[in-house]
Figure (cartoon, rainbow, N blue to C red):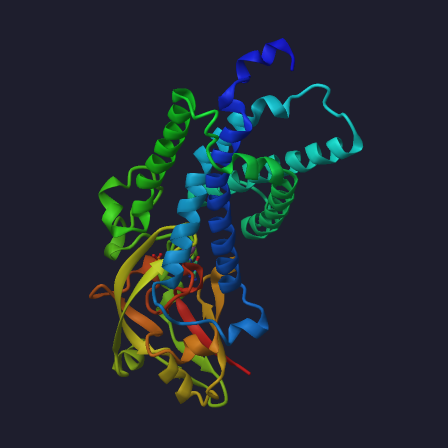
Length: 370
Ligand SMILES: Nc1nc2c(c(=O)[nH]1)N[C@H]1C(S)=C(S)[C@@H](COP(=O)(O)O)O[C@H]1N2
Ligand SMILES: [Mo]
């Protein structure tokens, strides 16, 4: 190793430290990956899955997406610590010793680049900073597979070292330097988790200092991601609102007629993919009753169409189980008040164990799907 890097030798940069930090990072990435796959499948279920998506537990998606974002945030200090630990190896000389060595280094380069980019995109997304021209979700999804593939390759290549250093070496005990480093990394990881997890964990709410969202800041006790103004749902657009239900026996309802139907109550959280979630009390008409009235067959799915003009979340599909679930409402009220325009006045979908992006606001049309 060249002399300029001497300061980077020593046990803070050895395989034992790299293994210790690496396994925490590995756990965080694994949690992100598994929960990310779940989130992706819920948002864009393939046809075979749509009819099988579970409606319980009602807090399922809240848990998995809360974990996804918390583990992603925790991975940031872990990744930085890991890179700092292996730093001398990233700049070793000569850069390439053999074909095998070149391939190994190339896989590490892919791993580092994918990990940095994936976490960076995720952070920008939870800050709602959509500065790129591409679809966040498609890129985040594709990169996740690159990252996991490169990680598995890395684990395979490094397996002998990892197993050798998994346990503490009794002949070479952790000195105060390594203990201090690992403690510092653990403290930093714990701290960023504590000051952001309050966006989904009610217990940690008072500590929610850094998360972009505070679940109880916002009108009617809920945050708003897209306002009526942003969706161009103006008073003129709302003036002649009707609910159209298209199916074997199509019909149309005014708001007064909808309000005259039996009203039901659901206590359900909204869980945004960006990691915040909040409980709310919803009142409205059961989706299942609206569909029955249209003569929908029992296993039918429904397309929900919003008044919103354009945009990816203008429509959503409610799968058969959710369509039949007594908790799924076309909600007219939230937390005891008529929905305000930002929360989807006059009517929105609310359902259990589903991502927030599918809880379509400003609903004007339901289409029974064959
Ligand atoms: N029509 C429509 N519905 C929508 C959205 C949207 O952009 N357009 N955003 C969704 C997202 S991303 C979330 S998290 C929830 C948030 O609901 P809230 O604003 O009432 O809290 O609404 C969903 N419903
Ligand atoms: Mo969302």
